[in-house]
Length: 188
Image (tube, rainbow, N blue to C red; front, side, top):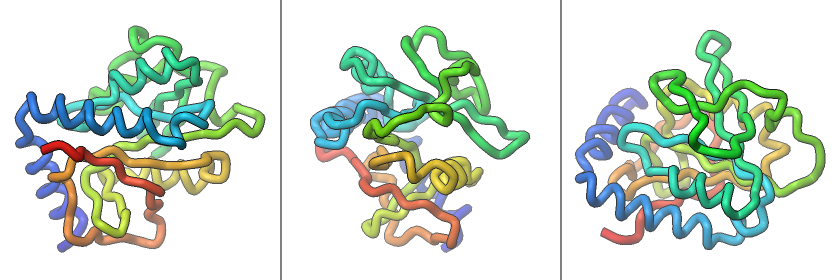
């Protein structure tokens, strides 16, 4: 099966999750993240603003801010095929950006400008995953390129997904970047 078909099938399954289940499962996933050693040790969290049927990150991002950690969210530049992570102090100031995803404004406070040795946890979305830990994204390669450029500054990476997004085997290419951990809902 090719990536396009895997992506289509996984999105159909994810989009068919009942709203109530999506909310409960998202809470379960977020709870696992904030209880993890990686989250506890991290001073900087590179997260994302969820949209459509993704695992909801709204409460996670609020918790990051409340816990006094530095939160960065991505802004996508489709014409350059890249993204940058900008500092976010409140979820109230995000703007509608690429494909309708909420994004921060550009600022001097970009993760790419960060200096130091702080522990950094990247939390990423995805369309599908497999038991080997491979991730299938949306097809733009934004996270793959970002991790290739800045992965040496990121301590740990995790993908958030629902159990229904699991594929038997993800078709991978040489440039695909694999998250260290995939966190999915334990509750059904």
